[in-house]
Image (tube, rainbow, N blue to C red; front, side, top):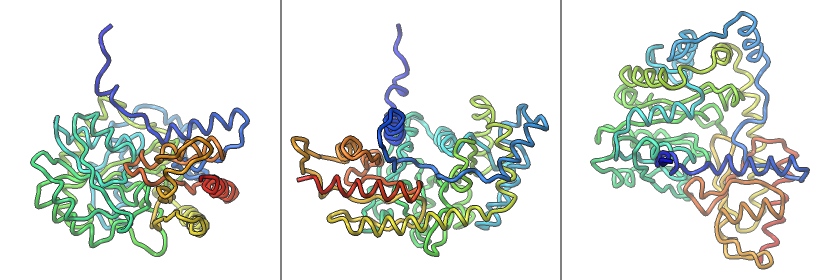
Length: 398
């Protein structure tokens, strides 16, 4: 038989999904496994949002919708972006997608010609480079140091740009580091983007999960020129605990949004009509759930950081957003448990899962092999058990 697509076969499997799946399988088999790997809130979708979906079903709202999404949801997105960030979009500039991940892929696919380069600050969300490669482009990584809280350095960005550079992909707050870009950095990045005639794909899925009085600033809101150059990506998965509902969205200049709507029309056509109706309610009605959730995450974050600070040789930057910490385990590399030598983040993650029954995601998945990602989107009881096991496992290494 003839070969399958080389681009598809070249895709690396998601390590975050792989680790979470392995942990779930072992737990289902009766093992005592604590998973600190999942990238989704452990809260339930608020009742008023669920009720909106039930009513949509009862009213027969089960047919096709417009490929760009229902008009009232695109209106709700525009209203939310204006109220929260002062950015003015029209419904024609918004496309509703089956999750933010699909919006990221559509954005990359509509920008990318074969051989185009996309600059990605590292550590990065695992999916960005794979989607760039799938579209025929080349990911170019921009290393960000823990000493600068994983913030991209403008001078390094300038050096990474070549005649083939098409776009910069940013994610703030960042998965896995929780880094929130400062206004100063955003202004500097904007100057470089405009100077070199680039686009920006700005993944803002964690923008409502912010701590310590910090303020989220969207790159699209820096100035009118950046709004034209930015494809703003967001969704309801994280802020509204709606991961399984698969509702994302993007906002962009009309030429881009029209192109992406055409692409979606030929692919999935549109996200679930029922989920879209629920999303209207989520965006338009009571937002107090988000504050309550962020308050709980903030308390967990403090507890986790305090616990990690008491583990020797495990430095950890302070996340300003999202619900992850990204501590540096590299001082334990080269040590052994019996005859087993821990040489990198993959080995460390496997060791902690096998020997201690705690699942973390290796930093190699995010482009930083020194670290492992710990999610605190789980119960306090699980955090206490999981981090105690991590400490125990590290003590055993000699």
